[in-house]
Length: 180
Image 1 (cartoon, one colour):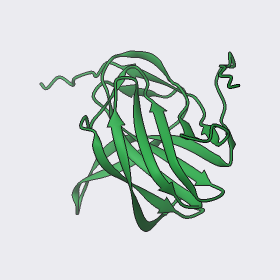
Image 2 (cartoon, one colour):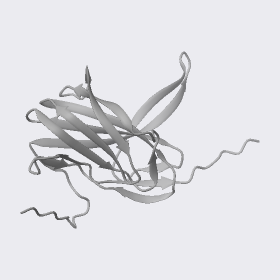
Image 3 (cartoon, one colour):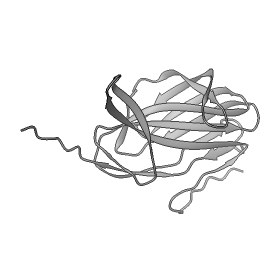
Image 4 (cartoon, helix red, strand yellow):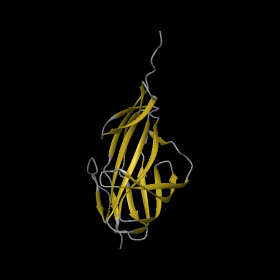
């Protein structure tokens, strides 16, 4: 027998068994510097923060595996007012990270699909340790939206599964500066 259920808790908190996932959002910040010209930086977003229409948001999905696994899918549900920057599905990469979250340099192949409600990442082999998948969104429609938790699970072993925290984000209208 197999049962699927949902929770009424607000906000939904992370949970996992054998694998664990954490999703982080970052907003693109471009600063003018004296020596380098325009410098790009990514500032972390917290639950309930506000962004403007047109802003770019980077999503980092950090997976921690307690063992080696095969055939996992990570489904990352997007907030309704945000759209994926990359629209073409196909091959992609995820990287290994250390305990502090720094990339270790090793990359592994995955297959990615960008759909209306979510981005899906199919991983054929996941080694024990920490790994990171990144992709970008663009804020488009003003309003307050919920990003339902990322759900990662083994495709053929339902007991191996995890979900991230829910994220809420408000998209405001971009205000154009008037030039004198």
